[in-house]
Picture 1 (cartoon, rainbow, N blue to C red):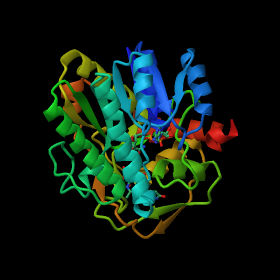
Picture 2 (tube, rainbow, N blue to C red):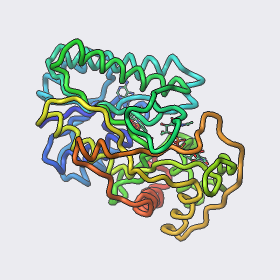
Picture 3 (cartoon, helix red, strand yellow):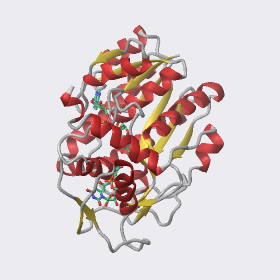
Picture 4 (tube, protein in one colour):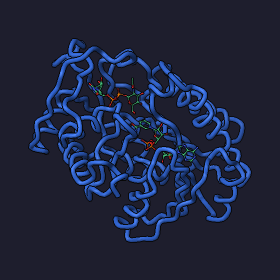
Length: 338
Ligand code: NAD
Ligand code: UD1
């Protein structure tokens, strides 16, 4: 099938591109490169051995999206394109509402007009806000603590309303926990702009010597070692989850919402130790204040994904750290050194 990947040049989109190509699909990337680098396209060619189809443009341009869907006879869309920085969403909320919700509306209108009504949507564990307990199941109350989280939550609501209005829509909502790691080739990976705000890229940048130490945001949480616990999931496992989601949407024609996580929680110090082990490098740490908005523990119950998609994450924390390290070591400045 020809599958449109909005934001397909980004971190999760590029790994999903490879998983789809390996499953025999033809992925078509639509990206405006607002937070990615065109050098990824050559890397995708190197890994897949196939010409990469990429349309450079904006999802907010509805007629352009419609044209792309028609030209490539797209059967389904995986919608990654969005801004994702929590801090930036607090300082510039309108940019987030415009891109994440305005962009989603534009995409959905283009899909509706072309009768391409099968969609996989990138949602996030952020929709659970501060969860009452762990592990988190899909029926937990949803809440938001920042504009980014609000866009994900409203995006989910818009899709639910669309399904009610027209049952032809077939939508898989995937709530990612903490995607980390990289393709084992070391050719594609996470390439954050500036100082990373997420843990794993910060840790690997310390390991490679780009940053002096990691600030550990809080060591007095009610967790075994006092640091925050998250459900880190290897981006290659996550990518496979998208292939499974598409298959289920196509075969059964039923919509669903599932967590994509491993069901295991690891602390900040667990991640530091595992990275030190796989890299052979020291990762100096300094204890710092808690980061506002952080929760003590956030990890999934992934059993719905197992039941509905027949999918489960396979890779270990060591795999995640080893692959993130390989990418970092071979590309110390991300794609900008290409
Ligand atoms: P990313 O920033 O690496 O990729 C997003 C891609 O979308 C980039 O290539 C960017 O250029 C493109 N894009 C943004 N706005 C666009 C627009 N208007 N038109 C066309 N292209 C546009 O992010 P990612 O980590 O790959 O995340 C993908 C999706 O998953 C996002 O929706 C994000 O909110 C969601 N998500 C990510 C995480 C995470 O930790 N990475 C966690 C939960 C959910
Ligand atoms: C963050 C976002 C969340 C988003 C997710 C994926 C916040 C409050 N939450 O989640 O909305 O969906 O990223 O993009 O920003 N840590 C450190 N030092 C660092 C960085 C992180 O100690 O330099 C700790 C954090 O306190 C946390 C853990 O590492 O305990 C993971 O942090 P991070 O990778 O930013 O992910 P989340 O906080 O889960």
